Every structure is written in C-alpha cells, then in structure tokens.
Amino acid sequence: MIKTHYRAPTYLDTRLLIMYDMCGKLDDAREVFDGMPQRNIVTWTAMIAAYSRRGLQSLAICLFLCMLRTGIFPNEFTLATVLASCIGPHGLEHGRQMHSLVIKNNYNSHVYVGSSLLNMYAKATKIHDARRVFEVLPERDIVACTSIISGYAQLDLDSEALEMFQKLYNQGMECNYVTFASLLTALARLSALEYGKQVHGLVIRHQLPFYIVLQNSMIYMYAKCGFLLYARRVFDYMPERTVISWNAMLVGYGDHGLGREVMSLFKSMRDVKSDSVTYTAVLSGCSHGGLTDEGLDIFDSMVKDKEIEPEIGHYACVIDLLGRAGRIEKALEFITNMPFEPTIAMWGSLLGACRVHGNVSAGEYVAQRLLSIEPENAGNYVILSNIYADAGRWDDVVNVREMMKDKTVIKEPGKSSINLNKTIHTFHSGDRSHPQKDEVNAKVRELCEKIREIGYIPDLSCVLHDVDDEQKERILLGHSEKLAIAFGLMFSSQHGILRVTKNLRICVDCHNFAKLVSEITTRELLVRDSKRFHHVANGSCSCGDFW
Image (cartoon, rainbow, N blue to C red; front, top):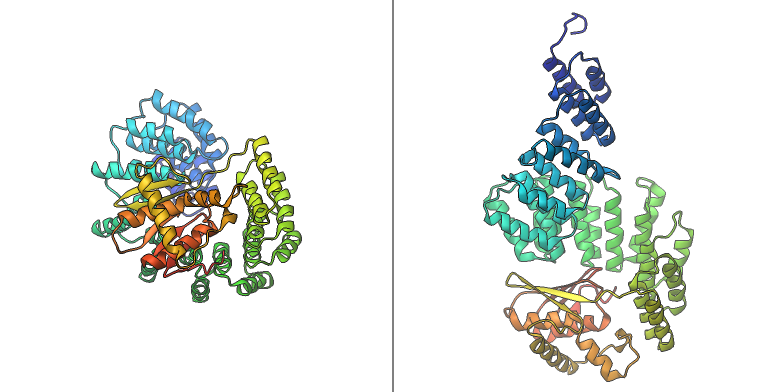
C-alpha cells in the first residue's frame, strides 16, 4: 500500500489498525491511527479497545476524551469498551462519569452498555449500584445475568449469588460456562453440595462444552464440600489440564489433611510446570498432614534449585508447618532470619501453635507483636486468653478481657451451619433463636450422657471464664457445632454424611465430642472449620488430632 502510494479509505485503514493490534503490534496500530487523515467512530473504538485489552486503561480513557473533543460521539460499543477500562484507583470515579454520559444520551436501556455498567460497579465492590442497573434493564442477556451473579460471588456474597441464580433461572435465563463457574465458586464457600450436584447435572443436560475453567470450578466445589471422590473423578476425566487444575486438586487434598495424597499427586506432575501456587498448596498440605520433614525438604529444594523463587507465602507455610509440629523455637528462629518482614498471618499462625502446644512464654511474645500491629483483632486476644486459661492464669485472662473492653474489641461469635433438605440451618454459640432450640439442647445433653459412658470428659480449658466446673460444662454444651451436629442427627435420614460448616476453628472439646458421637451413632461427620476439614468416622478424625 505504501509502495504503490495507495490512499486507503477510512474503513481499510481501520482494518489495518485492527490487524496490527491483533498481531500484538500496538505501536504500529497507533502509528496507523495517528497517520489517518480521517477517523470514524469504528476507528476510535478499535484503538480504545486495543489499549483496554492490554491493561492500559488510562491511555484508553485519555483517547476517549480526545475523541469527544473532536466532536465524534460514542456509540454503544465505544461506551461499553471505555466502561471496561474504569478500574483501578480512579476507576469508580471515571465509571460514575461514564454512567452520567450514558444516561444523558439515552443509552442506559441498551443491554450491552447496561451489562458493562453493572460489571464496572461489581468490580468496584458497589454491588448495590450494580443491582440497580440490572433491575432497570428492559432486556437482560446472558452477559448481564452472569455479571450480576459473578458480582455477588466475587464479593463472597454467596447466598445472594445463589438466590439471584435461582430467580433468574426460573425466569428462563440462558446460562453459559461462565455463569456456572461463578455459581460453583459461591456454592463451594457455602458447602452446598446438593446444589453443586444439581449445577453439575445442569451442565450435562445443557450439553455445554466442558471448558477447563468450568471443570476447575467443579473440582474446587466438590473439594470444598468434602466430596474428594467426585473432585478427583472430574480431575481424572479432564481431556486437558492446566496448572490451575492440578493446584485445585492439591489444595483439596491438603485441606482434608491428606498429606500423602498431596505428595503423590505432586510427584506425578511430570509434564506440567509448577508455579508458586503449586508449592504453596504442597507446603500447606504437608503442614496439615503432619509431614514436617517432607515439607522442609521441598522448601529447601526451592531455595537450592531456584526454579521458583520462594515468596512470602511459602515462608508463611513453613512457619505454619513448624508451629503445628510443636517446633515453636525453630519457627521463631526461622521468622527472624527470613528475607521478608513477618506478616500478621505469620504471627497469627504461630500464636495458634503456641496455644495448641501450651507454650506460654512464646505465646506472650508473639501476642505482644500481634497486638501492636492489629490491636483491633479480637481473635488475638481470644487465643492469648486461651493460653492463659490452659495454664490456669485466670488473673491474666481477666487482664486480657479488660484490654478488649478498653479497646472496644468484640469477639466474633461462633456459628455453625448445616444444610438439610436444601435449607441452611445456622446455630450460634448458646443459641436462643432457633425455633427448635429446646429439642436441640436436649439432644446435645442426651448425646453427652451417652458418650460419657465410653470415656468422654469435657475439656474445660476451652471455656475462658473463671467460673465453676459445672458452669463451664453448661457453656460447652452450647457450642454451635454441637448444636448443628445434634440437629442433623435429629432431622436427617439415618444414613449419609452430616456436613457442618463453622466460621471459626473447632475447639478441642467439640472435636472430641464429634469423634465419640460418630462412634455411638455410626454416622460420618464432616466438619469444615475456618482452617481445614475434619472427616470424623468410627471415633477417629482424618486430621489425626493434628491441628
């Protein structure tokens, strides 16, 4: 074209610009753009989209402003492209200005622009604004519906994501693999296995292609719901796997404390290049599975081989590994000599280990470091109180409680949930709100009497109040996981696994309670707490009493 002095029309120059962009030659695309004697809306939109796709949001927005100054007005595709660039520190501010422009020019009812608007608000964590945009759309396509469901899921508003999906699906919404992948992520966090199975069935009935991202979401969902058999089945039948697929399966095994399975799967990754997440999953799996030496060997190989430079997350896993093994002094030495500043999570992990292994002096030191960094975190005070209570230092327990009052720190209440017949029942510690609280409390007392006959002794160290032993036992009876387990035994069928989810870490007494109840009732219990899974059957737990 240049050699023949051919003066290309605007549409052909635009195609030339797009060709360079699609070939990854952004500078050449811009050179064509700058050399065009005339530009139409398609030309401007193509150049703006080129910047936006490559994460150059500020350049995309600047170019859009230049276009407005030339007098060319955007169409719906331009507006949607620029809205996709409204992310980052000033993204919401730019997005609101774009929203005003959309309304002024009557594009707010256009489904393509509306989908981009609600997606912008969702990414900016303004889900209520996204919902308002969604509600006024006269037509809702698959992109808009998926965007609002994904928005709720990305903000961990999992119940809202499920509720929105159910509402839209009943209204005839079409679904694609992105819709289901977003929903499966929400269901994983809800431990809603039955709903997850139904989504799996919908994917099959809709004859959707099994995209890798969808299969990865299924692995994650089944693993988080404690159904490792199905997670592994999905994994094994995948025609193609990415490193994300392997990582999802490794994390699943690690969360269940199956360290040997983690190591076996890791060793079979011959043709897949591991990434930093892989090593985090393996180190965490060794930590939860009690494979201390194996985990330390893997970390040492990372340092020596330098194939993947250890990151701060890998150092955190080693600290957790040493802490769980009771090697507190070694963990303190490691945290002092590492090339990173210790994070809050590292100190928190070590404080929990001091509580489990009864190391008061180290616990005090670690707690002082934590309380100076985040004095508003109630969990640190609670663990320090636990350490003092275990040692019988009740005056120090009182002092910690006074510190919490002075700083107006409120402990997060324990709550446990169980999903029966597609209804999630939630219990709080000392629950007085559940409509069947009297029957449930009676069932807990009945179970405690039965397991006393086979050796149950309440672990009174789990109560942080300086009251008599009888009162401590009453407090233990009201722990939320006991209430949820009792409710499940009362109102579920006589077979199948009872699945309980707790927002905090399960206490030692409730752990003992679950093991003995599984023995006398011959029921399997799966308790997912904030740290890991506890698969309890026939009086023993998959964690091997190793937390």
